[in-house]
Length: 477
Image 1: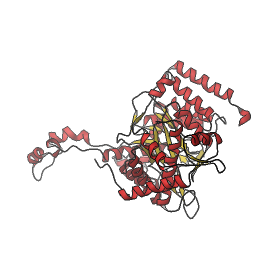
Image 2: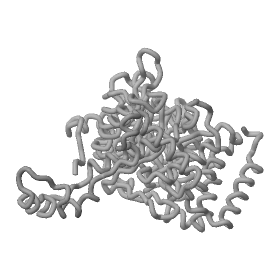
Image 3: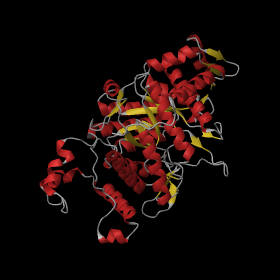
Image 4: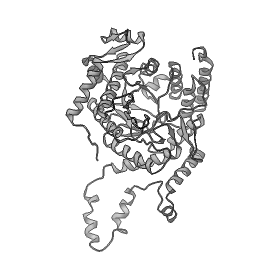
């Protein structure tokens, strides 16, 4: 199997690592919370409460990186799609918190709704090669302050796959979501053993940590639930314009946030997550799938591999606004190169327009790309049977292998695409793949039945959601 492609040599990896350590030691991270800074100060960090910064000695960073678990599981609620982190596997996750959807029927772009969240979860549940739900849509029609709770409920009712949360706004939401997940697993103790949820802490580039985001992720970490430490600098905007500079900054932010998580909750399973991107110099906007972004994503993999920590990276991005040729080649380029760089999780299926919109038919197409890629990089056995000396000798020159028994034995080994057609109509219709993707979305939404929640569990979840809405402290909103 082709397992790895490298864009950095060992000396360059060391240089990125040492530069990130210097950033954390000399500049530090900004955290506007006396409460958190006091805790870190007691643990020996260099804290400046006037400027709200915490600087990190090299030895403390190294100790935290060494202490972070190198292998752990992200579980599915039916236990059929557990993800084994740190074992050389690669999984695919929807992602993005897209604010809009491109309606697969009309092609029109509109704000995302809670029904879109439910439909998206159902499609992901049905598509074999999509392994995890990573908050792909942010609904506009949910209550302020408790909306993510509604989104989580809609997700778990329509999919059994692991859910990685992104856009939690408060500890309040975190506690209620953990409560719901605990109900599904028969208690929080069982949830801790078989974590069907995880949460993301994202820094605010450059080198800033949001206090609420930290409190939210620590709510998960204190329970022993997995989290991700994430950085999203924009080269030329919130990071240096040079890819190397943004890579060093991104790495500093990821490991800096990881160190802080470990300082509060030692031995927390953490996914190293980095989505360094590039600002289009002409517009100032983020441009998905820029070559420099792909390079940084590949380099991120090597740096995370240096720490031996499971990592997640953007792997199926595109700046195209609709499913088209641009979208196809950009996503394929991102996916192939990120996969070859050794990612544990690639995110981005379904996303369009630099992660600002999602389309259900695009999820289908991207699932096909993931399937294609997995098969292309799978091990092909090399032995007496597969080398086929016997059949080659038997068939000989100027003949064919179509009807030979060796062909019949192995014809099922050949990968068959689900979407591109081979009939006369498909050859005459360049849009056949998109049409088949739309048809599959319709079929899934009409007929796919995810494993349902137990009726009593579903009822208790309804009560938890109602309680969350009722007790939400609106006066503090």
